[in-house]
Length: 175
Image 1 (cartoon, helix red, strand yellow):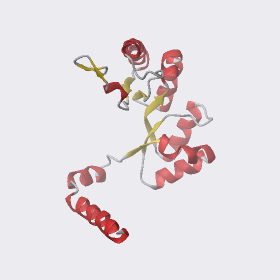
Image 2 (cartoon, one colour):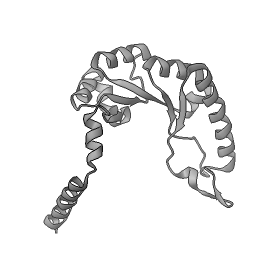
Image 3 (cartoon, helix red, strand yellow):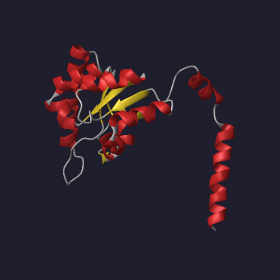
Image 4 (cartoon, rainbow, N blue to C red):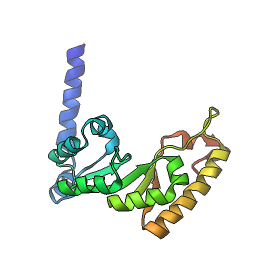
């Protein structure tokens, strides 16, 4: 049974690789290199920031979203990126930092060279994500997003996880 499972996995990989859209390969070869989020290498960054950046660059990755400064200032991190030809296009922050430290978030994102500021989690209680949470979040996101755009030239975005799509009346909280 183990062999048949592995054979199935192998055949699936072969089929996918054969049917892979060659336009994506062409785009990659023209310089639209793939990116990565720092979360992927969070454990490695904690141990060896410089070495991990070198490894990432060695993979051919030149675009990264940082969600942590890993004990460095934004200026120090930017220097490490510049030395390796890596760009930070997005800066992920916590909801509390977005709301309570919007100016610091904007300064750090701009220093890193990011175009986007991203939040990936909305705090909510044991009852789950509620209408009150959604209303507060919309107000907080609009306020922070406006400041980030007007003062820092940044675009705010949100990475959902699914709880925002819980049923509510004739739609979802996300609606």
